[in-house]
Length: 432
Image (cartoon, rainbow, N blue to C red):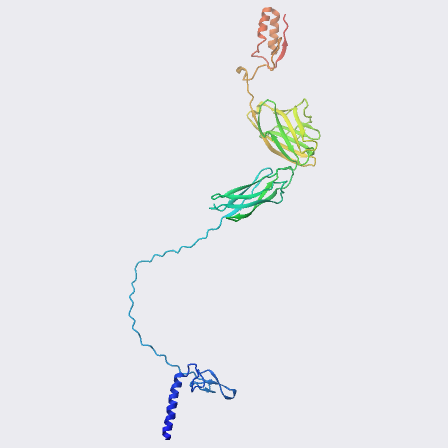
């Protein structure tokens, strides 16, 4: 009986070990196991902590890793070879199209400059022509120049039709007589439609055209005269305040480096005088007097010259010069310049104000006298004939000899001789 009992215990333990060997290490504590997996901690009695051994029993000994279970190697599977056809042609690579974003149309404005009195023109341009209408607003803004005194304010809307790339904005610039530095104002672009603004502000520069003494204008600026014939020029000088502040105004005609006529007006004395190339002037003579001032190649006639101011305190004065130039200057073009000084000691040097073309005089008369006219300057009256001195004496002697010679003399006195001096004088005839 004892032998049978032991065999039963051994059989149970053997079966249990087989189960245990199969389940130990699957991380599940099952019947007959104290812990799982091997190597983990486990509670011992009395609050002590043990380690799970290779038999999934909790022990105080250093844990040992459970024996690794060999992984069965699968039997090789026969895979039939796959035949691959290799092409000898080089494949053609097709480019993948990339979408390009077109930049928007942009607006820009220019920066013009011009003298006082000239219209300012701002150019507004598109970066490229648009397929749809483009609009933008604009308005002027003060800088160092002020609306109303330096320019006329303006505002509005520009419209670019499809295909149009440029538009102009015109601003009126006011011409004043103040001596001042160059000034600026602006045109601003705002609220674009179908475009963006690349440059929104345009700057205009107003160039001052007034000297420290004022400005001059010749009427007409370009003219022509006949040599030896009396002509006139009109010069207007405008001062910043009053023409009475002027000291002198000079008008000069030049033929290259040669001064033909240099006339100085003295405002305080109200006189005209002639000056030489050393800026030395002679005695002044009032205008509208019966006098002439003779220069080297020209003459100033004061009887027809005048001075007219724009009121007692007006800013401008009009000077009229009656003159003639010698025939030696025929065919030449003279340069006309003007200068001025004021009572404060300011001076404005000579500046070109115009040109004068000198034409040759039209000749009449007998070609045997070199083309010069021998016509008497006045129509002879009855009983008086214009003759040269030698020929008149001869006729006088003949007239006293006989009536016949007197009749011949009477016939001869009505014609002009072809010889003799050119200084004519009147002769009164008395019948013998």
